[in-house]
Image (tube, rainbow, N blue to C red; front, side, top):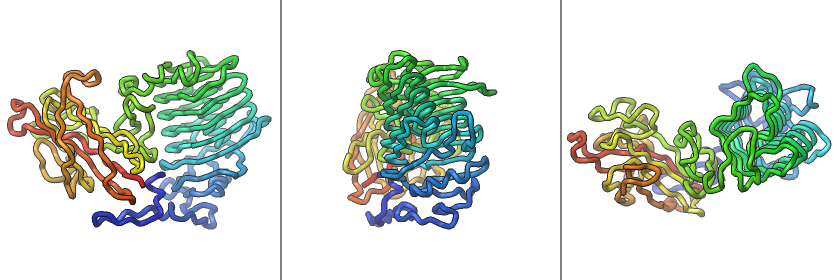
Length: 459
């Protein structure tokens, strides 16, 4: 359940948590949507199956949609948005922002129809982003994909879980990719007779910029066919760019792909598999050694990191700034900042959240909880750095870092399992770690702070 979908107002420790109005009801205005005017500043709002169906009435470039709740399509007959023949029109040229919500139980079962997916053809200016498809089933003839039959635009920060079946050119996300798909993943069983792939069935067409798959992964079962691949089935243009992308050779049963790198299941679930281009502080997260990478906006996943550097927008005390782009706090005596990450499921019923602080010297590390972000990091000075988690501070536990781990050689990792402390209503809390630095380093301040993590506890 997404924290946005809470429909009850809950009172806990003097803090009122209220679900969004859109999550409590889904009005339909004269426009056919829940609100908005279709501009970038005021997009049309989508929160029902009928409103999703109305998207097909407005497909021109320069129009914008934003989803504001999960949309359940169970039992709803649905035709792909912008559906057309392989050589025909129209295409969807607008922007659809899933806004961190999902489309559930979408089923399109048309085995003799070409161009099948949530969207038919996506045009060159189209953007599909921040959207998840759960329990999706799409079946067609030529060009089948859960999100799009043919992509000529950009699909980013999306995932699909379900089934995609096509006679030819079937993919977990896209049947025929002619443009870019970035920071996406698929757990889709793909079937058919040829050109099948976990993310893309085929790279096709001639474009000024080669088709691209960047920072994506797939782990669904791919049926053996004349041409199939764990990530990409086939590259017809012979110049597609597949960068920093992976597929699970075991679960897919595929040892080859027209791009990408095959890994074992165990490797796919390890942080060290993924290069630095994968942002595990802003885009992705991973429960290291337990699960595949997930997108940070997904419901039930723990933690959004913030307050990097010292959180103030100015240099760290003693001039010990971490390297640009390192995504960590002020420098320690080991030459890097302490990094705090959260993993696991923050649904209170699951209670599997683990906070892990890495890059610490051998020292005591204090995990603490606050009830708010300090705006802009401009909080009370707390040693070497600023306290980014503010408000009511609660000491959770003290752990001792042990240096020399395989992932962070020469530095220490400490972790703490934390439990849902907010009662049945859930809510937001902020976490940070204070730790001792080497006594000889920056003698005016011999302790430091990691970045902070905001965690939404979900009922």
